[in-house]
Image (cartoon, rainbow, N blue to C red; front, side, top):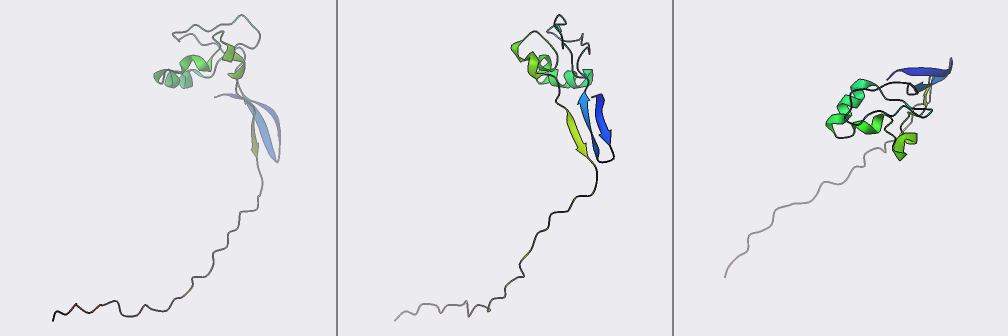
Length: 108
C-alpha cells in the first residue's frame, strides 16, 4: 500500500494508507464513485483477495460496509525499549531412583 505520512518526528510516525480517490476498474462488481470518500486499496492486493472471493470488500461498491473499508492510521514508534526480562529457576536436583528391577514371580 501507499501511505500518507500524517505526522513524524524522531520517536516515530503515523501513516494512513491511500484510499480516497483511488480508482479500481478490474472487478466483477463495479466500483461506486458517487459519494465522498470513495476509494480502493492497491490493485495487487485486490487481485489476491479476488482469488479468495473477497475482492469487492477492498473498494467501494455501494454496500453498507463501505464506511469500514478505508485503512486505519498505522503508528510506528522508534527508540529504545526495555526488553522483557524472564527469570528461569535453577534446576532442582533429585535423588537417583532406587532399583527399578523386580523379582520374577516364583512358582511352587
